[in-house]
Image (cartoon, rainbow, N blue to C red; front, side, top):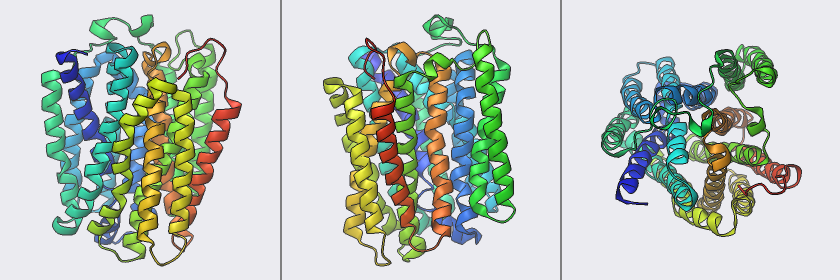
Length: 458
């Protein structure tokens, strides 16, 4: 990779950093936000799930739109909008307005990850692509390293609103770097050409069904933990959303140029990457927000100290991500993927044991978070490499669906966290269920999903 390539990659990584920073900045201070607005855990987790649900549901459509208007241009607009929305969130007079701003930011943030992945997939190949994916994973992890303690410290000493103000300069710096150095990938593909010889599908009906169905299904899941009227409403939304998604799948089977190409979605590499990414994001959400709530809401620890404890997870992710990229190039992505799932399961089990009593076992929490972080980083790097491989990575809607499933893990994690803490106790059941989900993902991807002979490893 030459000098301009490195500078362009740095521009993409700056946008990745900004998006991941904002995604994670509210995880540790959630307890402080709840206290400020006098809200319970069920309503308060909407600060997390409102962002995650809309980002997940909008990602396939954002990928489709991004290819039409240009990946670089859409990336710049998305990061600018995230910065403006951060200011709005900081000025929110009540929890409802704060959740609204988080929802709106989820919509624009949906453009960031597919845009970065598509620019990498369409401008790099071979070892350069694997190296870029490893660095992308590191940028995600480094953003968490900064956001997790920063959120706790800012909330502790400058109030909850400073948490959101801090994202404004981060977004501003990312926009400047993008404008100066990011490779210009034009509308409808590189330089205006269709990517991968396919062009942009005009299946508006399919795009609408996938987006609406995802919003209803994930929004319904997010509403369930609130109890009361939220229970039947959430269940109804989830069932309706599932029906719409099933209809969109049937529609894609007969459409001439469908929004979603079923042959890619059915491929072993795509299924493996999507399942692994879902459980990895589920675990990150539950681990960071769950341990923070356990320490702050349950044990009375101040939010800055809790942020220091939780730092173990993103710090280990930052260390393990480049190693995972190197290992994937050496022994193959699939082997690295399964190793990562095994490590992640051990980390979740350790957190379950550490939170099983009312006396916080800080060394056990730090160890569990560190092991889980290493596993999550390995899975993240392997799945991103699989999703951007040459034979499928240039399909923007496939990348969008991959990220829909990925972010759905965060949305489901936030909803499940509220359920776990509503059951009383220390919330340790959340970590036990994460361990079970990772073990199930290992079994499914290792023994039930097969790659045809002659296919490239992913």
